[in-house]
Image (cartoon, rainbow, N blue to C red; front, side, top):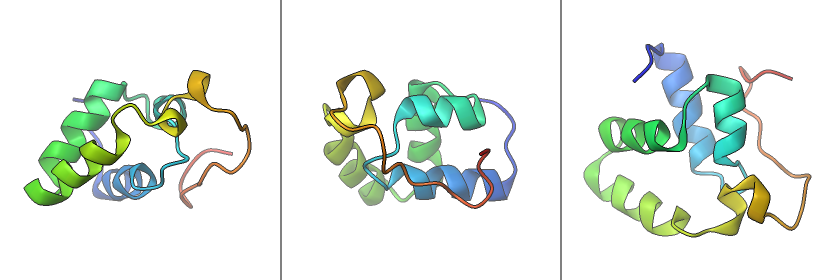
Length: 82
């Protein structure tokens, strides 16, 4: 996994809990692939929180840009690129 500072890790976790933030947006902002995001969530969150998050995002259309039916409404963390 890439070296990230605590603020970036907190931001990634925060935007991952928002269902409208796609894995592609996280890739663009932080250069992390979907599997790296999953690994980060597994490492940085409590086990029960990780299980709840994974259950929510699996096969959720809003987490994958190509499957979304809407284009606007993506959450932005204060340190994300414009």
